[in-house]
Image (cartoon, rainbow, N blue to C red; front, side):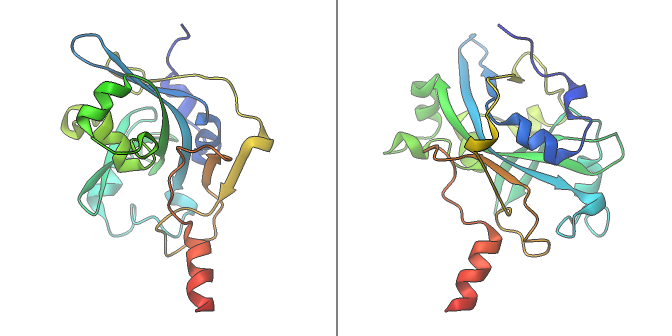
Length: 207
């Protein structure tokens, strides 16, 4: 089994990290030793020094402090009351991260379904809050831990070739909505059903 991705992997431009995380496996090890594993099929980059949508560093002090942690440590942010799993990027003191938006379940699906019962299995982890609930993650216990820790880590997977990668604008972004910083595995059924902000804005303008 390969070693988990080290913190140094994340000490880079988050757009490169998000692209290269496609195909990696997110592994949650439960207290009894059971593994809950999902393949990363969608990720988004946030890079506050050059991101007009980023509130960190300007008027959101709490988020600034969280995102400016050392690279390769887990972060959580709340959206509409739901926790979202991120990993810090770039050097400590710089607010940058990658949001893990969707997973393809590989191991421990039965246990994931007890954490988050759904009718269709494809709805289990096809969104950033959904995967947090399916893995049974407690933000207070995970936030600040190194990304290569024993209970939650990322394993390198088979690289996803460029022709299988779709790049879009991010989801739910008002400012900077045209930045192509969302990366997903083209045609994968576990990709989130969310509409990129750029496409949503275009659709609304046509009505």
